[in-house]
Image 1: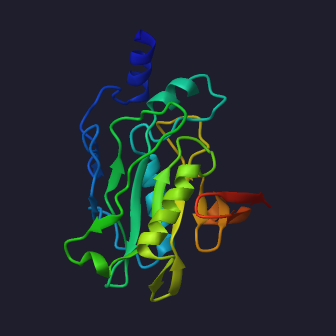
Image 2: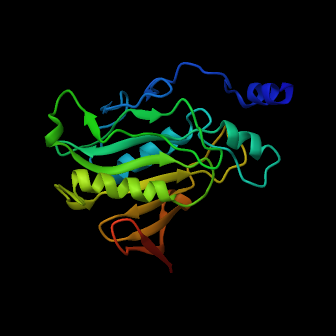
Length: 238
């Protein structure tokens, strides 16, 4: 117990229930959000979806307990037990701009094998009616560098069923996809935005993006996902 408490103090995080940070919505245990507010105060709007992604990655990874270091680290098991996921939408507005929603997180992680956050399907933006918004990216963090989960894949497909497989923007059609940011760093108090995994329901592509020098990003398709029927799929590695 004392070891856990001292670790929490050293990590700079509260291990007990506390008020979520500004910009984060955390419903009480057992309750779910029906909508998530947008835009996120102090961020955006963004002229391109790339700008929104680049802004969102460090924002999400710096949230309390969003990263757990590397699995080989001595304190990783404890960091993992304390870790949380944060999720948000990147959406497109009638102003032809991309915006970030508020971040959602869950008060309780009831499965020790995984982390999750419940992102509502609808963004509530006071300046725009819900039907005028285009839903582009489902954003969330993974506490360490691991690929998209079965839940991630199925949630992306469910959201594509609700909102459509793509969004028409002034720069062309942008496919809806789910994004999982990760940090490769050992120190969870100073996370770095090192990359993200992406699944695109419209094409079946699973892609790994990694940050390079001078702001460049490397794209590598690591697999193709094919649905065999309404409930089963096959992943073919590249």
